[in-house]
Amino acid sequence: MRISTVEQMRALDKRAIEVYGIEDKLLMENAAHALYFVILKALGNIKGRKFVAFAGPGNNGGDAITLSRKLHSNGAYVKIYLMSSPEKYKGAAKMNYEIAKRIGIQMENFDGDNALVRMSVENADAIIDGILGTGISRNVEGKYAEAIKIINESAKLVFSVDIPSGINGNTGKVMGTAVRADYTATFGLPKIGNVLYPGFEYCGELYVSHISFPPENYEDDNINVFINEPIPLSPRKKDGHKGSFGDALFVAGAGNYYGAPYFSALSFLKAGGGYSRLATAKSVVPFIGTQGREIVFHPLPETDAKSISYTAKEEILKIAKNVDIVILGPGTSLHERTQKLIEELIGEIEKPIIIDGDGLTALSHNTSILKERKYPTALTPHPGEMSRLTGKSINEILNNRIEVARNFAIEYNVILVLKGAHTQIAMPDGRIYINMTGNSGMATAGSGDVLTGTIAAMYGLGLDFEESVRMGVFVHGLAGDLAAQRKGEDGITARDIMEFLPEATKLLRDEYENVKDRYDINVV
Ligand SMILES: NC(=O)C1=CN([C@@H]2O[C@H](COP(=O)(O)OP(=O)(O)OC[C@H]3O[C@@H](n4cnc5c(N)ncnc54)[C@H](O)[C@@H]3O)[C@@H](O)[C@H]2O)[C@@H](O)CC1
Ligand SMILES: [K+]
Image (cartoon, rainbow, N blue to C red; front, side):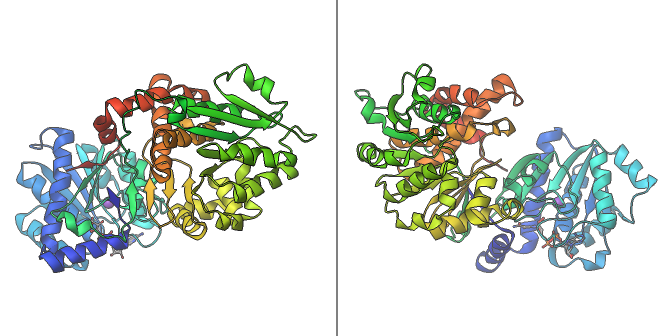
């Protein structure tokens, strides 16, 4: 499914109106109907139920008034609080306001927090939030903030129209304050703010309605943000040998960094990969060797600090020639000579590579080396590492995740995985995939190492490089969700994520449609 910006949604509305003649009042009717269905689904029946709706000054308010008329028509009691003078309404919103007035639906101006409003809310079964939609243009203050406070303090079921009021439709950021909804129905396509955190969380259960747009209305290459849907894995070769499922080289580890090489190299095998090689400083081998017997070790000369020595370069390049994919950087340390080694390997390895951890720090000294690469490259930074790569502050990155990731991927011709809740995967042609698997328990040391191994495993299973990165991120999150289901989010460790990789891959093979549905946005 595509995800749109606010501006793209406006263009789609315009096209629906101008090309197909689906007038704005039809769109509004459809929008109201969609949320009506969600309410029906949540409450069972409507008759005799009491609703309080807050209607803002724009079309979001118009949708709320239209919905109120539907609820009224089906036997509910509705009271609407108008956030500003109804003279402001235009087009479909104005028409629906006038219909509601003629019908005699109770409408009052909201002049700020007071006992009467609180009492209406207290007596209601549910609240409709149509205060602000995608037209939010500044921070929420004054009586708008007061209305949101009343809603959030009410402990009633809250249904948001399009997007919880106060959430920025392009970024998912809270603009001062925002409604915490139980359900949200969004219209046309989900907006980026519905899908990125924290907006996603504020939506509660998220539904999308296509409000009668024909499917071709969405076929627009400029709308190039997508949900990261899983890609079906082809059946495993029954007569396969370990080389059939990929041969991966991990250049990882240093004295005191035993977890990163272990988790990355072993996760490759757990997620379905065939042959896992670990090239690491020689004194690291005995520490991991006893636990990771399935891994093939290439002990390398080391520095005084027990990190991989620069002199290992030719040997690494030689091994790299015989593998399918190379992973650079998990726990290689910040030793200056080792960093130099990794930096040069990035430029010289003639295989697809994944760069993570200390490899990203090595790269940040000279990002232009990426431009020399003629083979596919994926980077998996968290926002801190992204900050090092771009020189931008972490806040700047968090506030513009999509743009920052996209610009980097295009400029350096790489796949950039910007990690975090709902990780973004940016492709060199400008497409972005937003990943929906995973949970907060996965923000744990070593989780990123498991990710690199999982991506490499997907490549070993026969997906192309781009698909492997997408599926690696998906499967890693799915394994984390399975771990959370079993153990709770609080105590998940990298080991737990790794241990659930076989189950995650199996689930995708056995129950592909179920898994896909579980992480899709429901259509009403
Ligand atoms: N395809 C779609 O997405 C459709 C969208 N529709 C609705 O239209 C909405 C967008 O409508 P509008 O563009 O009129 O925008 P909104 O209804 O979101 O609000 C715009 C109004 O709010 C004011 N405003 C902005 N920020 C404010 C703040 N912080 N405090 C107080 N007032 C503020 C603006 O001055 C303007 O008057 C959508 O969210 C959706 O509910 C539907 O009617 C039908 C189709
Ligand atoms: K809203």
